[in-house]
Image 1 (spheres, helix red, strand yellow):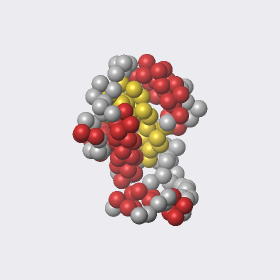
Image 2 (tube, rainbow, N blue to C red):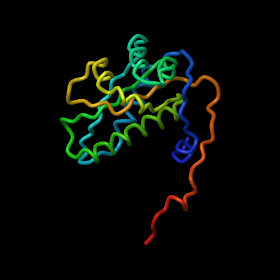
Image 3 (cartoon, helix red, strand yellow):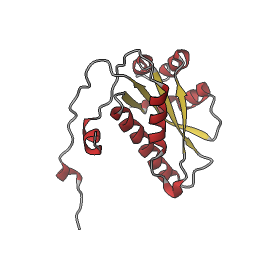
Image 4 (tube, rainbow, N blue to C red):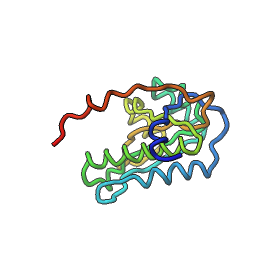
Length: 168
């Protein structure tokens, strides 16, 4: 799958088969994520891989989208390492790129994924559940697994001319 096709065909997947995600697939996702660009190449992202059903259930209770986490055999918490941070906004942009790489790699390997940002409303509780040190700040949790059913949806995008606010 070429890059353009991956970008345009990726969809958020919210229902998963119960099959576990193979270890080599997990490594591919994390490896793709770590190749994201970051200011000064500081790579401020860190990951917690959650396969244990009881921990995924605890995470599910932290979001109104808990059914997605309950369905997924894998969750990846993506955290900002504030100790390695040099410029918060740039580092947040890098973490966003890291998340996008993870989502695109999931799609390219036949997995489905859903970026859960609403869980940030319970950030401190999620960080407690995951036992992360104080210098790691939750940015998102990504639910991952093999899609149940067809990938669906044809999300509309605003016309490009509506998004361009200037040309010089």
